[in-house]
Length: 131
Image (cartoon, rainbow, N blue to C red; front, side):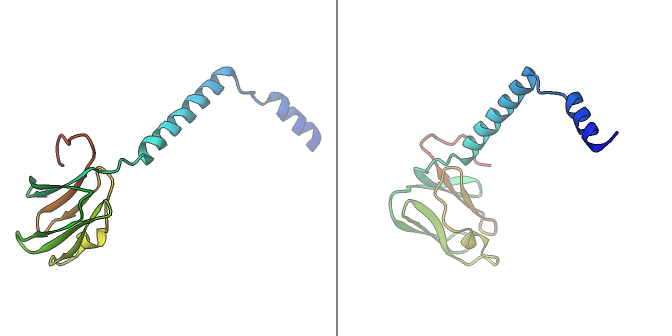
């Protein structure tokens, strides 16, 4: 059997897609598209909430520009501007919270573990819990 005969034989015996194969493929594609849309959808936040040791200590509108000093277990300066919030300066050793940069979308947070501080962006609906 030469190459031409083997190729022809393969194509005759290869399975062709059935209707159920197409249905499954379309359902999987739709699920992937819906998942990507939900993951990539970003809800701009409406307000900033500050938590110290897991308890809410303050709440500010994200549209107000202001500096917020935090002086519990150390010093930090939190800045709200351009509908985003970030930590400008902090006296914690690793500066991870400062290097996090600005956040602006609901659900995003900045955590400073040494100072037990969490800065959370909250959307239009209320938050049920802080993890």
